[in-house]
Image 1 (cartoon, helix red, strand yellow):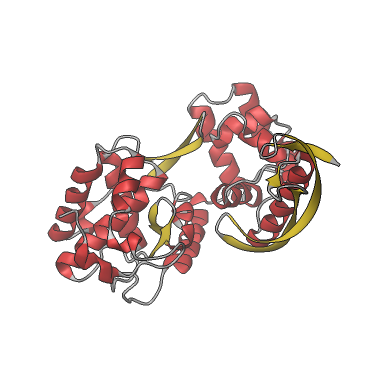
Image 2 (spheres, rainbow, N blue to C red):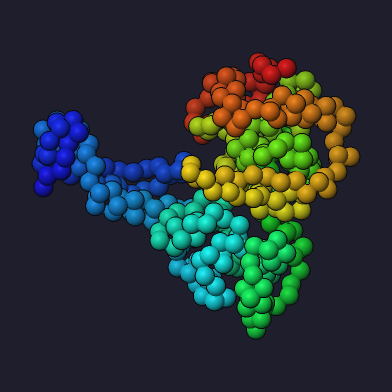
Length: 337
């Protein structure tokens, strides 16, 4: 077997080496990959067939570990309502090729997977999205009536569904007050209002950025008042501090105070947070609101990459390792004030 070796600059025979794969997308998995290695220079080579099989194997291991939705689940959802990929994409508000990619084997993010599962398991939530898409002229009247005429549709209470989601989020994010959450018990109502308020003040607020806004708010509050504002726990991630366990994704399922909008560009899918502008600032003290406004003023005109780079200069990120929880002790050396 031969393939072009860019190191030897000619076709070379290669051997296949089996290697363990223990991590994917920041999660532990247990599988393997077959890697082509040049017999002459011993460097790794790219062999399309091997890489395709490796991807399938790793994706499947990740799906099982993280309980990610399968392509057939999405196909079954479309079949149930007799809708096309284009129609489902319009209803969900995803990028135009997203559903096509997932049905061909692409792996959704955990948040998108959970969201699609939610729509599959809760028909009322799916119907709610259909109504929303129709009101925004994202789907035609024909598509709307086709879905709404299904005999198996039963009206149910959307508020009950949101209450269930809120309960799950609270269980995932809450922890006993300690140095890793700024000695603050999580208050989901307050957190929702804070996110909605920030989104109302910041144009094109991304999910990546909201992590930094909340982290800086909590850290600055701890530095000035010895207690955080939100009760969230943060960890060291590649692009800066993020909510522990990437649980910011679960917060995006809520739709009472804000909604997420996804746009697709040449670099992938970007999720932005749009405020419904129904936030209630009465849940905040004057000191908390002052801190929030200070962080907004500091960051609102910066690009996402600039905010990430800025967070990389803080001790909380510099002195911790990937996936390590960030202690609020580092707030004492916070540079933004």
